[in-house]
Amino acid sequence: MLFAVSLLLLCAGISASGDFHCTLIPGKLKQIDAGAGEVYGVNDGDDIYRWVNNDWIQIPGKLIHVSVGPAGVWGVNKDNVIYKFQDNDWMSVPGFLKQVDAGGDKFLGGVNARNSIYCLRRSCTVSRSSVVHFTPLDGSVKYYSCGPLGCWGVNSANSIYFRHNVKPTSCLGTQWEHVDGSLAMIEVSTDGSVYGVNSAGSVYRRDGISAETPTGTSWTELDFCVTFKHVTYDNGYLWLLDPTGDIYRCEETDLAITQDQAQRSLV
Image (cartoon, rainbow, N blue to C red; front, side):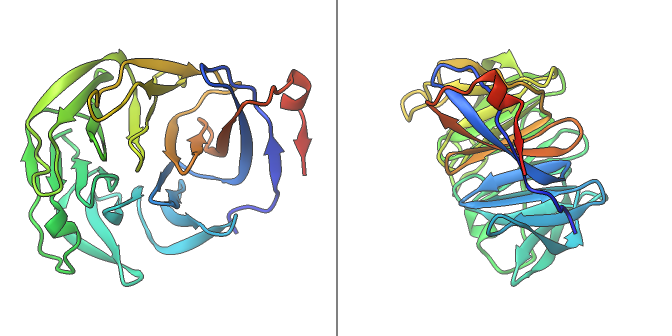
């Protein structure tokens, strides 16, 4: 069983819009992804889990990275083989990627072991055929994530880039725009919100994102009381993993959280 103890952790966060009420979710994961109302994750043993009715349900199979979103549920294993979850089973598709993202408008993005970028247009992701053809993009990033207004990536130097004019029928896009800041990983939610974690474990939110300004205007640091290695967002909740694999689900609140509360655990 993945976990046995339920624990509530209140952690003060300082941001432009308020504090964060964080629940420490029992269990350990090395990667997590939330999108389209669902949450999936994988642990150090490459076991796959789905969050259902406030519990982790194990999904058969072995993956090192999993993604859920409008394009469905996709993942890659330790050999970088790509899988799509279809008819309650994992179907392999041609190609090799180390990271995938299903957050686009039913199109898929991903990165291979050489940090080359690929995408799969909507007609391929919705097809029930295992024969699909990935489109290569120019550039190089180690992490790539897409949403309704475009795709974001971070390269090996932790520089941040935005891909313009990405569409379901033409996932290639047209050009890169460098965005200020430095992040080790970045995630775009189904609603277009963008969050990331830097090399020091600090969490950032991109503000000012709109259809007119898809790259936003500034970064806000969310000053949690612990550091993190991974973040994802959906339906009003931030899901975060700390360096040891502990799982946090955080909701922004206007309520003041005292230091005494931050130290309290309720079983």
